[in-house]
Amino acid sequence: MALPNSRRALLDVALAAGGAGRTISDPMHCVALADLTHSTNVAVPLESLHGRSVLLLTEPQLPTVLALLALDGVARRVSLGLPDLKEADLPQVIADSGADFVLRDDVLRSTLEADPAAPHARDVDTEWILFTSGTTGAPKMVSHTLLSLTGPLDDGLAVGAGPVWSTFYDIRRYGGLQILLRALLGGGSMVLSSAAESVGDFLTRAGKNGVTHISGTPSHWRRALMSQAASRMALKYVRLSGEISDQAILDNLKAAFPQSDVAHAFASTEAGVGFDVRDGLAGFPASYIGMPGAKAELKVEEGTLRIRSLRTASRYLGGSARALGDRAGFVDTGDMVERRGDRYYFLGRREGTINVGGQKVYPEEVEAVLNRHPAVRMSRVWARKSPITGAVVAADIVLSEPVAEFAQVRESLLHFCRAALSAHKVPVTLRAVTSLLVASSGKLSRRDG
Amino acid sequence: MSIRTVVLDQVKLVAEHQQKSLQPLLDTLPLLDSGLDSLCIAIIVANLEEELGFDPFGSGNTVIIPQTLGEFIGLYENGAA
Image (cartoon, rainbow over all chains, first blue to last red; front, side, top):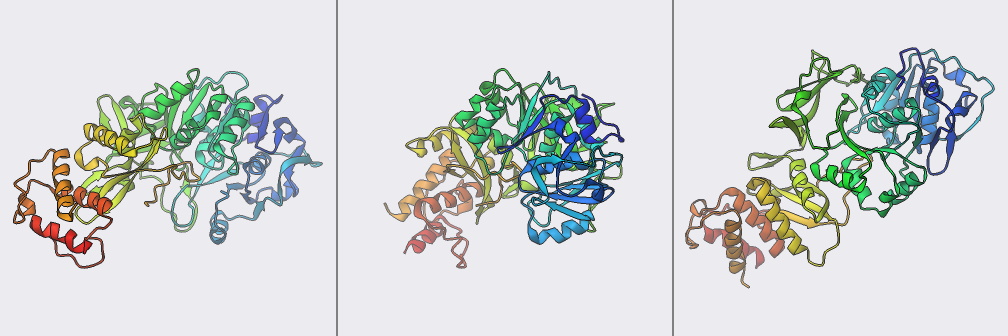
């Protein structure tokens, strides 16, 4: 894969990887990459944006992708606004990003029109601003460069000729942007997801468009496996990130797509991609920690995983922003890990623990056990208030198949949990639900209810 | 089934699941000496809320923390009345 140096713009590097037949598509439109040399979707002259800070804020992803290709190397800073940005937060976002222009759907089209001023000199080292998927308060913005974003792509993943990439993620989020960049720099095409489309329709479209490489969160994948349409894809590569990949989802994906490689990656908007794991097993080899010469250095301190690399974002934007890393440059991911034998396993988020009478429970570790049970498609563990212990563990279950009598499944699940977990981690309350809310970040929504 | 029976059945069920050996279930039995730990009692309270539809501890009233099994059963009998 040809990686950009700091003087080459995204469009130039993408086209250098080949032009013929490459497309970027969404449910409504399909754009040929090669056409971007002489046409544009930006309805204002690109010269007027030269050296400026530009906030892209469109509903669908395609107009933002096309504008990003047009503006990298032209604008000083491009901020990838998320469609769920609240209008009330917009003034703060504009102030923090120092935006000179906000380009919305009225200026950014989903189609191309001839650009009489082309070709443009793309000689500016553009700063990219990504929004993090924080759940409360105004969104945080982190600063990246094309170099920090493309660093993880040089990981020796053999892709083959003419890959068609796709992702359940919105490409304006870190996990999705990684996939878009892999498609652009690796000579592939890109099939974008759409918030307006059902999982089944997306999978059908992915199959029809010949998607070979696709990524999503474990929650995305659990939902996908509930759809008959998943089998219409002929995949070579399945990637998981954004949440803990337990052994059950890895095994289920391998069974559903036996021809594909199933890999799970650890990444965050702030820390960048830490590593990926390709041996089909949950967790990661202990040898990854402190490995000399690794592009992303890992260490474990106070139980959480810390990452230092050139791929980490350089800083947060905005007046109230705190420093990203510690003095040595390590970013604390907030993900708790535990060593068992020669492997580390993710326990869960540090701030997500349930306190049962002073004993900690990570919802994710209970979910991992529940998800191993054949009757369970996906689960969400939450804290139920208790007058005696402060909280007890509760779980909502989406069953693989409908059952007449949940009570029997319930007994079987409790038996299963008691065999695998200490007493305070076993769910006290088990409810069957028809679906679980997955947030726009692709992660399981953890607001208690 | 009386409230008393429902509560006592839960106590026995949870003790069995949690592999606790119970003392004879007399009303005067102090909860702390019953063989149940606080996790067991938390599970019993959660299960009883599902079975009886209320939680005497969560009703917003000031609840005197029960010290004996009889007082614990009484909370539920009074709550249902």
